[in-house]
Image (cartoon, rainbow, N blue to C red; front, top):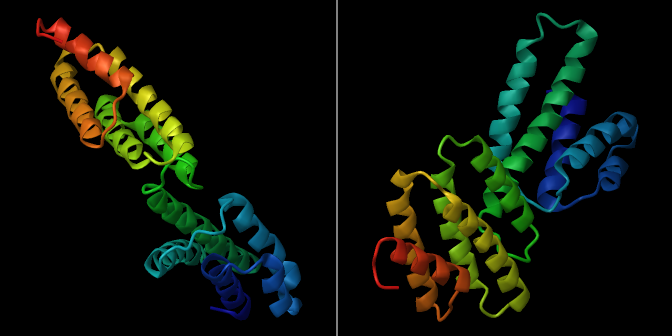
Length: 220
Protein backbone atom coordinates (compact mmCIF):
# COMPACT_ATOMS: atom_id res chain seq x y z
CA UNK A 1 0.00 0.00 0.00
CA UNK A 2 1.53 3.33 -1.05
CA UNK A 3 1.23 6.62 0.84
CA UNK A 4 -1.88 7.98 -0.86
CA UNK A 5 -3.71 4.65 -0.47
CA UNK A 6 -2.86 4.54 3.22
CA UNK A 7 -4.09 8.11 3.67
CA UNK A 8 -7.32 7.39 1.80
CA UNK A 9 -7.95 4.25 3.82
CA UNK A 10 -7.34 6.09 7.07
CA UNK A 11 -9.55 9.01 6.01
CA UNK A 12 -12.43 6.69 5.13
CA UNK A 13 -12.07 5.02 8.50
CA UNK A 14 -12.14 8.37 10.30
CA UNK A 15 -15.26 9.45 8.42
CA UNK A 16 -17.11 6.17 9.00
CA UNK A 17 -16.04 5.33 12.52
CA UNK A 18 -15.21 8.69 14.11
CA UNK A 19 -17.58 11.06 12.34
CA UNK A 20 -14.88 13.28 10.84
CA UNK A 21 -15.75 15.57 7.94
CA UNK A 22 -14.04 15.65 4.58
CA UNK A 23 -12.52 19.02 5.42
CA UNK A 24 -11.03 17.68 8.63
CA UNK A 25 -9.39 14.85 6.73
CA UNK A 26 -8.04 17.20 4.09
CA UNK A 27 -6.54 19.53 6.69
CA UNK A 28 -4.54 16.59 8.03
CA UNK A 29 -3.06 15.94 4.60
CA UNK A 30 -2.95 19.24 2.68
CA UNK A 31 -0.31 17.95 0.28
CA UNK A 32 -2.78 15.30 -0.99
CA UNK A 33 -5.96 17.37 -0.75
CA UNK A 34 -6.44 17.67 -4.51
CA UNK A 35 -6.43 13.88 -4.92
CA UNK A 36 -8.36 13.07 -1.78
CA UNK A 37 -11.24 15.53 -2.07
CA UNK A 38 -13.04 14.04 -5.12
CA UNK A 39 -12.62 10.51 -3.80
CA UNK A 40 -13.95 11.29 -0.34
CA UNK A 41 -16.80 13.43 -1.64
CA UNK A 42 -17.78 10.69 -4.10
CA UNK A 43 -17.90 8.14 -1.30
CA UNK A 44 -20.16 10.32 0.85
CA UNK A 45 -22.36 11.28 -2.10
CA UNK A 46 -22.90 7.64 -3.07
CA UNK A 47 -23.54 6.50 0.45
CA UNK A 48 -25.68 9.41 1.63
CA UNK A 49 -25.50 8.39 5.31
CA UNK A 50 -22.33 9.12 7.25
CA UNK A 51 -23.48 8.33 10.76
CA UNK A 52 -23.46 4.55 10.40
CA UNK A 53 -20.40 2.73 11.68
CA UNK A 54 -19.56 -0.48 9.81
CA UNK A 55 -17.92 -3.31 11.67
CA UNK A 56 -14.17 -3.73 11.22
CA UNK A 57 -14.72 -7.17 9.68
CA UNK A 58 -17.17 -5.82 7.08
CA UNK A 59 -14.87 -2.97 6.17
CA UNK A 60 -11.82 -5.17 5.79
CA UNK A 61 -13.70 -7.83 3.85
CA UNK A 62 -15.10 -5.38 1.33
CA UNK A 63 -11.83 -3.55 0.92
CA UNK A 64 -9.84 -6.76 0.51
CA UNK A 65 -12.14 -8.14 -2.18
CA UNK A 66 -12.25 -5.01 -4.26
CA UNK A 67 -8.59 -4.19 -3.88
CA UNK A 68 -7.81 -7.77 -4.95
CA UNK A 69 -9.91 -7.20 -8.05
CA UNK A 70 -8.00 -4.01 -8.81
CA UNK A 71 -4.68 -5.79 -8.24
CA UNK A 72 -5.66 -8.55 -10.66
CA UNK A 73 -5.92 -5.95 -13.43
CA UNK A 74 -2.35 -4.75 -12.99
CA UNK A 75 -0.95 -6.92 -15.78
CA UNK A 76 -3.49 -5.55 -18.25
CA UNK A 77 -3.73 -1.93 -17.17
CA UNK A 78 -1.28 0.80 -18.24
CA UNK A 79 1.20 1.76 -15.55
CA UNK A 80 -0.40 5.14 -14.99
CA UNK A 81 -3.78 3.53 -14.33
CA UNK A 82 -2.62 1.30 -11.45
CA UNK A 83 -3.04 3.88 -8.71
CA UNK A 84 -6.41 5.02 -10.09
CA UNK A 85 -7.76 1.47 -10.04
CA UNK A 86 -6.58 0.91 -6.50
CA UNK A 87 -8.00 4.20 -5.25
CA UNK A 88 -11.31 3.56 -7.01
CA UNK A 89 -11.42 0.11 -5.42
CA UNK A 90 -10.98 1.59 -1.96
CA UNK A 91 -13.81 4.08 -2.52
CA UNK A 92 -16.14 1.42 -3.91
CA UNK A 93 -15.32 -0.87 -1.00
CA UNK A 94 -16.19 1.90 1.42
CA UNK A 95 -19.55 2.51 -0.25
CA UNK A 96 -20.45 -1.19 -0.49
CA UNK A 97 -19.51 -1.87 3.11
CA UNK A 98 -21.40 1.15 4.39
CA UNK A 99 -24.51 0.13 2.44
CA UNK A 100 -24.31 -3.42 3.77
CA UNK A 101 -23.85 -2.16 7.31
CA UNK A 102 -26.71 0.32 6.93
CA UNK A 103 -29.03 -2.43 5.69
CA UNK A 104 -28.14 -4.68 8.62
CA UNK A 105 -28.65 -1.90 11.15
CA UNK A 106 -31.92 -0.83 9.51
CA UNK A 107 -33.61 -4.15 10.25
CA UNK A 108 -34.12 -3.09 13.86
CA UNK A 109 -35.42 0.38 12.95
CA UNK A 110 -38.93 1.43 14.02
CA UNK A 111 -41.29 4.01 12.49
CA UNK A 112 -39.98 7.51 13.11
CA UNK A 113 -36.34 6.43 13.25
CA UNK A 114 -33.78 7.52 10.67
CA UNK A 115 -33.24 4.14 9.05
CA UNK A 116 -36.89 3.04 8.82
CA UNK A 117 -37.29 4.34 5.28
CA UNK A 118 -34.16 2.47 4.24
CA UNK A 119 -35.57 -0.68 5.86
CA UNK A 120 -38.76 -0.40 3.80
CA UNK A 121 -36.80 0.24 0.61
CA UNK A 122 -34.64 -2.85 1.04
CA UNK A 123 -37.77 -4.90 1.77
CA UNK A 124 -39.40 -3.64 -1.43
CA UNK A 125 -36.31 -4.66 -3.37
CA UNK A 126 -36.29 -8.08 -1.69
CA UNK A 127 -39.94 -8.63 -2.59
CA UNK A 128 -39.49 -7.47 -6.18
CA UNK A 129 -36.77 -10.04 -6.89
CA UNK A 130 -38.24 -12.90 -4.87
CA UNK A 131 -39.65 -15.96 -6.62
CA UNK A 132 -42.21 -16.25 -3.78
CA UNK A 133 -43.53 -12.76 -2.94
CA UNK A 134 -46.30 -14.20 -0.75
CA UNK A 135 -43.75 -15.73 1.61
CA UNK A 136 -41.99 -12.37 1.71
CA UNK A 137 -45.27 -10.65 2.52
CA UNK A 138 -45.90 -13.10 5.36
CA UNK A 139 -42.51 -12.21 6.81
CA UNK A 140 -43.20 -8.49 6.33
CA UNK A 141 -46.61 -8.80 7.98
CA UNK A 142 -44.91 -10.33 11.00
CA UNK A 143 -42.42 -7.46 11.11
CA UNK A 144 -45.18 -4.85 10.79
CA UNK A 145 -47.24 -6.46 13.56
CA UNK A 146 -44.20 -6.46 15.85
CA UNK A 147 -43.51 -2.81 15.00
CA UNK A 148 -47.12 -1.93 15.74
CA UNK A 149 -47.00 -3.52 19.20
CA UNK A 150 -43.77 -1.62 19.88
CA UNK A 151 -45.26 1.81 19.18
CA UNK A 152 -48.05 1.89 21.76
CA UNK A 153 -46.76 5.07 23.44
CA UNK A 154 -45.97 6.91 20.23
CA UNK A 155 -49.19 7.94 18.41
CA UNK A 156 -47.38 9.16 15.30
CA UNK A 157 -45.18 6.08 15.12
CA UNK A 158 -48.19 3.85 15.71
CA UNK A 159 -50.07 5.49 12.84
CA UNK A 160 -47.13 4.92 10.49
CA UNK A 161 -46.74 1.31 11.65
CA UNK A 162 -50.46 0.69 11.17
CA UNK A 163 -50.39 2.14 7.65
CA UNK A 164 -47.46 -0.07 6.68
CA UNK A 165 -49.18 -3.09 8.27
CA UNK A 166 -52.34 -2.38 6.27
CA UNK A 167 -50.35 -2.19 3.05
CA UNK A 168 -49.06 -5.72 3.55
CA UNK A 169 -52.49 -6.96 4.65
CA UNK A 170 -53.98 -5.60 1.42
CA UNK A 171 -51.52 -7.63 -0.64
CA UNK A 172 -52.29 -10.78 1.34
CA UNK A 173 -56.01 -10.13 0.98
CA UNK A 174 -55.64 -9.87 -2.79
CA UNK A 175 -53.72 -13.15 -3.11
CA UNK A 176 -55.66 -15.48 -5.40
CA UNK A 177 -53.66 -18.70 -5.29
CA UNK A 178 -55.66 -21.21 -3.15
CA UNK A 179 -52.54 -23.04 -2.01
CA UNK A 180 -51.42 -19.91 -0.16
CA UNK A 181 -54.74 -19.57 1.68
CA UNK A 182 -54.02 -21.77 4.72
CA UNK A 183 -50.69 -20.18 5.59
CA UNK A 184 -52.13 -16.69 5.13
CA UNK A 185 -55.07 -17.53 7.39
CA UNK A 186 -52.75 -18.97 10.03
CA UNK A 187 -50.53 -15.89 9.94
CA UNK A 188 -53.45 -13.46 10.22
CA UNK A 189 -54.84 -15.26 13.27
CA UNK A 190 -51.38 -15.23 14.86
CA UNK A 191 -51.05 -11.48 14.26
CA UNK A 192 -54.50 -10.88 15.73
CA UNK A 193 -53.50 -12.82 18.84
CA UNK A 194 -50.20 -10.92 19.08
CA UNK A 195 -51.99 -7.57 19.01
CA UNK A 196 -54.58 -8.70 21.54
CA UNK A 197 -51.85 -9.81 23.93
CA UNK A 198 -50.37 -6.33 23.63
CA UNK A 199 -53.75 -4.76 24.40
CA UNK A 200 -54.27 -3.60 20.81
CA UNK A 201 -56.79 -4.18 18.02
CA UNK A 202 -56.65 -3.50 14.31
CA UNK A 203 -59.96 -3.18 12.49
CA UNK A 204 -58.61 -4.12 9.08
CA UNK A 205 -57.00 -7.25 10.47
CA UNK A 206 -60.11 -8.18 12.47
CA UNK A 207 -62.33 -7.68 9.42
CA UNK A 208 -60.01 -9.78 7.27
CA UNK A 209 -59.92 -12.63 9.77
CA UNK A 210 -63.71 -12.48 10.10
CA UNK A 211 -64.19 -12.46 6.32
CA UNK A 212 -61.97 -15.46 5.84
CA UNK A 213 -63.76 -17.32 8.62
CA UNK A 214 -67.09 -16.67 6.94
CA UNK A 215 -65.64 -17.90 3.67
CA UNK A 216 -64.91 -21.21 5.34
CA UNK A 217 -68.41 -21.46 6.77
CA UNK A 218 -67.20 -20.79 10.30
CA UNK A 219 -68.73 -18.46 12.83
CA UNK A 220 -67.15 -14.98 12.76
